[in-house]
Image 1: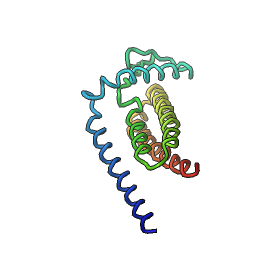
Image 2: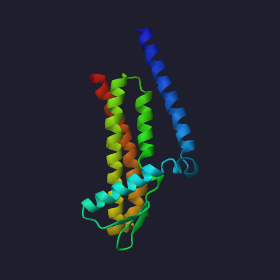
Image 3: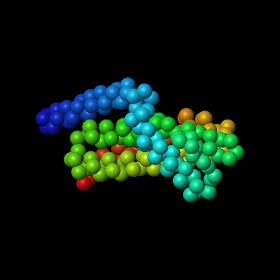
Image 4: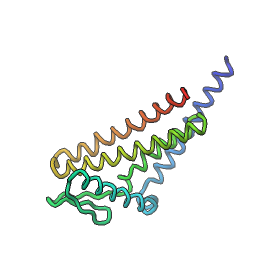
Length: 168
């Protein structure tokens, strides 16, 4: 029994060490001069996907590079921090660092990253809608609600994956 507890403690220490180190590296690198050009293709794809979804929902918009314009004058720019890369990176790190079988990790990555990217596109659509129809709410929703929501989503997806992977 003592060996099992010792092993669990070692795994927790290993997980915590990996999370702290990789998170520190990501946060140090998460700057425009380092990641901006690297993530430019993802930024353009995110802007294009946002425009397509806006049109699909019947909202008029035009895309010029990574800016999306509404005919009434609202415009926002999608840049690398809007791509969902950082939330996905945190989820990927958490899943890869956690001691589970590789196949469980693959499933967690495929499902978790897909859900986060879909949630991020939902966020972008919602923020554009707010910017056009409820501009006074835009900053609060963008800065507080959606950031908190994405953090909560990362934690819930990770914890849900842990629970699922233990039962399979």
